[in-house]
Length: 115
Image 1 (cartoon, rainbow, N blue to C red):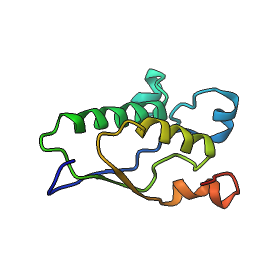
Image 2 (tube, rainbow, N blue to C red):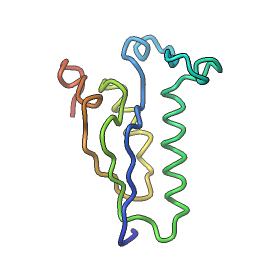
Image 3 (cartoon, helix red, strand yellow):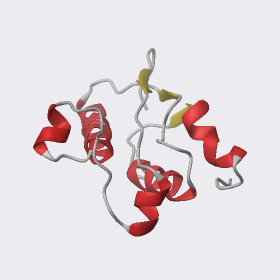
């Protein structure tokens, strides 16, 4: 494990709306930007960026002591999104410490998210 510094990830937004997740359909970015025009699901791209960042951590020498992940880790705080995030980080090269924010807590407030 590294010493002396840490990495910071924020606003990852893994997942997508529950209604799309439940039906197994990807949700496209509705903002009208280039991602939508290309037909690329925005949240799938977020997952790819997360995996890329974790891969880059493996290449650092020395590695950071840990990663601080601040807020908006998932899109809407659903159990499925949280499970997906946990799966994505299971092989992280360093410990990850999390501070949730509004997106991460929406499902919990609605009784959807759990532990």
